Amino acid sequence: MQGQASRIWVNWKKIMSYFSLLNSPTPSEKELASMRVKLTDAGENQYITKKAFLKTDFWFDQYEGKPDVALEAQWAADKRAKNSESSEESSDEEENRHHKLDFARLEAVKNVLFDIHRVNNGEDKLYIPDFVDFFIEAAN
Image (cartoon, rainbow, N blue to C red):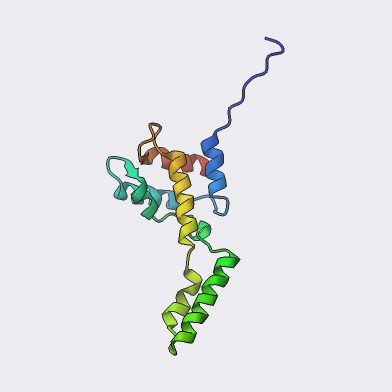
């Protein structure tokens, strides 16, 4: 049929997932295997709830949870204020300062990912094999 435009469908789940994880590298096979184990352990019958999903550690936590400059400055100001109130400084706190994550941002990213990949009927659960398979496909 000449003159008819063919339709091209956009996979919105893929696009939104990529945007959600823009700061993160593509997961390795080892990271994907670890993610599958963690999700399966936290879930039940190959499904995981949002609450359990948000508590799960992922390969992207260190990238997506990295604090921005403004938050780093706020943390530094809070530390200075705390140190001025107390004469002793915790060496453990200083050592861990660079390992802090912006947990609010990280939780927001995980919320978005969960909502993108949740089961189609809108229940508060995600089918683990489909979620992991999505990232396996994305990694290839």
